Length: 197
Image 1 (cartoon, rainbow, N blue to C red):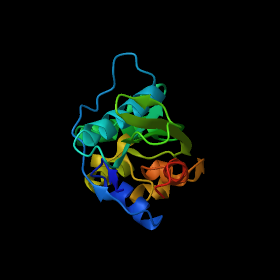
Image 2 (image 1 turned 180 degrees about the vertical axis):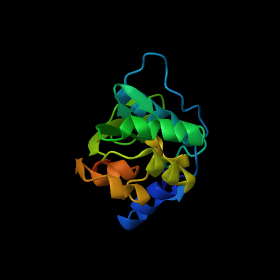
Image 3 (image 1 turned 135 degrees about the vertical axis):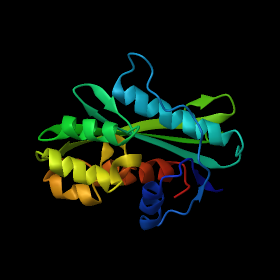
Image 4 (image 1 turned 180 degrees about the horizontal axis):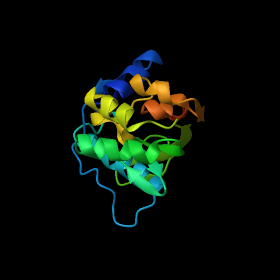
């Protein structure tokens, strides 16, 4: 039985490879916008579930892993920036503050032992991990220069903790891999429970 990652994220792929978990990739194409009034954790979990289910439709004999990472500050959900100006706006919101990074994870597979909730012809489990990230104050020049590198453009919250942005992050509370894009201890536990890791 194959594990399929419903994501094109190179960071999620690297995390799985580094953890020694074999997988294939089939990105999901869904609308990733939050719903009106949706709580951040609910949003991350819903999007992870929708990604996994979208791919599972064409892979009903395999396990599909969906994930979605969001950044939350002042109850506002920060996804991927639309453009350089949006990236700068997000970084100004995060500068000098502590924010939450939430990754929703959903594993969907064919009905097996019945230990998980069964919906239609699938078993599925959806969970999430939250990590608190503290960012130093960034000057306008630092924000401008960082955005110009292009690194923020496809990242939730407009930064990559494993990249250039590491210079402004003195402290995290929780799972580092969660901030990169996939909480590996949680994912491994979910896979192990199904006997696929």
